Structure formats: C-alpha cells, structure tokens
Image (cartoon, rainbow, N blue to C red; front, side, top):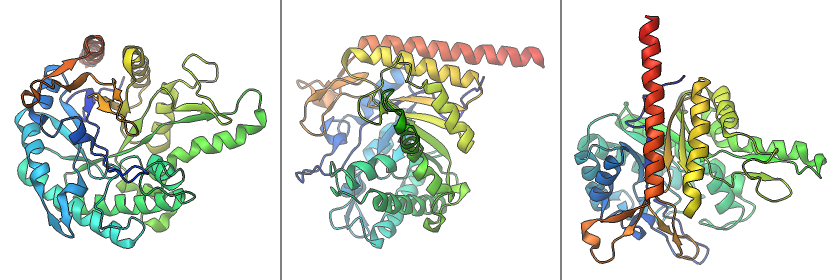
Amino acid sequence: MHTPTLFDSVFLGGFECSTHRRPDGRRLDLVAATGHDRAAAADYRCLRGHGIGTARDGVRWHLIETSPGRYDWSSVLPMLHAARDHGVQVIWDLCHYGWPDDLDIWRPAFVDRFARFARAVAQLVRDETDGVPFYCPVNEIAYWSWAGGDMAMMSPCERGRGFELKHQLVRAAIAGIEAVRDADPRARFVHVDPAIHVAAHPERPEDRAEAEAYTRCQYQSWDMTTGAFWPGLGGRPELLDVIGLNYYSDNQWFLSGGTIPVGSPHYRPFREILADCWERYRRPILVAETGAEDDARVPWLDYVAGEVLAAMRAGVPVEGICLYPVLDYPGWTNDRHCRVGLLGYLDARHPDVGHRTVHQPLAEALRRWQAVFEGARARRAETADSAA
C-alpha cells in the first residue's frame, strides 16, 4: 500500500478563491465573500483542530498587481503569516480564473506578466515562510477553457475559442513554473484539472468512440505541459509534477446528456480513474477538490475516501484528499448559500472573532477516515518492520 508523505496531512482543506468575472461583468472574490481574508488565522487554526495540516488557498492577482509591475502584498501577507503561525502548509493558487483588468488574456503580454507575477509571489513566499513551497500555477485549465472559451459562462466569456484559450493558459502555466523555479528551486507544483468519465448511453452505442474521445480530452492540458501534445507550446516532461484531480458527483455523464450516478453499471469506479492517471503520467496524485452539498457531504466523502484507500492499496500514489470548499460559500451565479463545507459562514454577530459553525456529521466522518488512513499506515509500518 502506498504511504502518503508529500503533504502534512492526508486530508486537506481547500478555500474557494475564484476571482473571475461573470457574464454580467461582476467580478467575484470568494476569499472575501466567505470572510476568509478577515478570518484567515481563525480558519487555519480551526483546520489544525480538525487534524488538517495542509490547505489549498489563493493569491488574488487582480488585487496584488495594481498597475503593471507594481505589487501590493497587503492582501497576501496576513494569510502567509497566519498559515506560518498556525503551522499550516499551503498550496497557493497563483491564478484561479482571475487576472488584472488592464490585461488582455489573448495577448502575449498576459503570459509575460503572469510569469513576472509568479516570480514575485515565489520570492515573497520564500522570504516570509519556511519549508518547501507548493503552487498551483493556473487552476483548472481544461474547465476554464471550456467554461470561459466555449460556453461564455465566465471570463473571458467567449464561444468557440476554448482550444485557443487552453493554449494560452498552458503557455502561462509553463512560464509561471519556470519563473517560480528561478526564484525558488525547491518549489513543487500541483497541476489541477477535473477527472471525468463520459460514456455512450446504452441506447446509443454508436456514440462510444466519441464518448471515449471526450474522456481523453481531460488529459490535454497535462499532455501540453509535458510536451507530448502541441510541443510548440514549450512543454517538457520535467514541468509536470503532482497531478491534481478534481472529482465531484457530476463528473461522469452520458454523451447524450444526464449524469451517471454512483452505483450505475455505467459508472466507472473512481479507483480506476486514479489508476489510469498514474499509469499515464507516473506522477504523485492529489485529489485536489472533492465534496458535496447538504446531506450528501458524508456519503460522498465515504465513497471518495473508500476509493482512494482502495487505489492506495493497489499501489497508486495518492498523496491526499482535499475537502473543497472547506467553507460554505455564496453561489457564483446567484449568491445562494451553498452548504458544502466542514465549516459554515462567519458568525454575523461576531465576524471579527472568526467563529464558524462546524458541520458535525462531516467532522465525525472526517475523524473516522483519518483514523482509517492512520491505521493503514501503521499496519504498513509494522509489516515493513517485520519483513526487515
């Protein structure tokens, strides 16, 4: 069985940090909307109290680069210091769908500016914290390309330009990786994209080849990063580090429409998707996002954790599972209260205290699975000692 060693805990907490613009032009800032910017210290302390030593979090490019080449770190430093003070290891998203308003994402300057920004962040993190830093250069290139380049659901709100956007985002990610490594050669990277499975509906077997091709598209941004696909973008194998797989209950569907539910004969076990990714890339894997809403939170964690444990027992190097988002948040399109987190909204009566309600069923399930993984690791260690 694989024993995770890359992160400070098997279970991670992910803070929603999207900063894109909606089709109506409104910019979202989920770090602010959830109050995490004001309550970072309390939030990190609470994670530690639940046995979570590693988090996903984000720096907000549009707030930091106030004019070309001028960086205002006032939104970042309190979070860096809070994580350091509470002993939380952070994977920092450098670009989570948002960028400064003066930049045109389609132009070469976007790539150049992002690289300079990434280098500046890496220098700041190096100077302010200890330990090996982790970054996600550009979050969810595949999803962003589809949602922003083909479906006009988020900035840059285009249609029919998804593949072009994917090229540009991969260029930016590559330039960002190289810039960060130049500033801090210790840096590690998590390349985050959704894990999907698309199947032909049983009444439409003629769709099988197209469904399989659609499923293979999930690999494009990683293959571009390694240079296996469109090598002119500058990809090289050494640029690909940790594979971050985002996985939710709607990540499997029929090509002709309709989600495939867990338990369906057409549903592919998540352990097999994890194994496929390992066989393809031979890189460590992080379940970078997973979660569900309301009463589905515990059953979904039970399913994902069980599948990850099975994959690890088969030798797949899954390094962790990130509860995402770890905080409830207001919905992107309508501000509705999305009850998805281990932790709820800030107490409106005392927001400065940083108190959040805990979803006790999820907290209990988390403790149960933490014990399961710790027990599996202990048995692995005992077996190794006996063999020696």
